[in-house]
Amino acid sequence: MAEIFFRPRAIKGFESASKKDQKRIRIAINILQKGAFPTNTKKLEGHTAGYRIRVGRWRILFILGKAEIDVVDIFIKKGESDYN
Image (cartoon, rainbow, N blue to C red; front, side, top):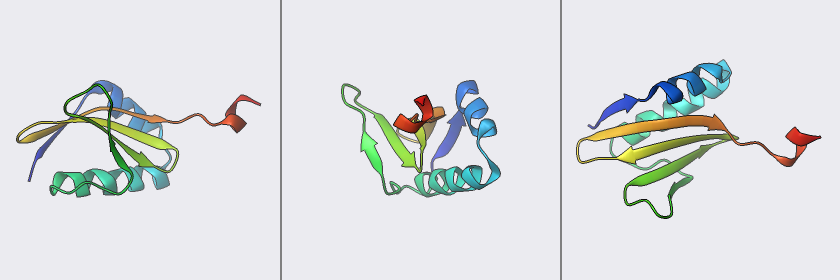
């Protein structure tokens, strides 16, 4: 099982999510900690160990290390309807 580290920006993003979304984000991170990639995981272009998980409108950015996972950011993806 990998050790998970959260950067301050990721903690702030997680706390701003609703309780329902926090639960969904927590489930995705638990799957990741067990050594599997959750569905909707993509490798980031131009980064050797960077990945993104899509959880509804939320995004989890993380860096995969040998024995640890560094959660860099958790943020909401703005859609077209957010600008109207």
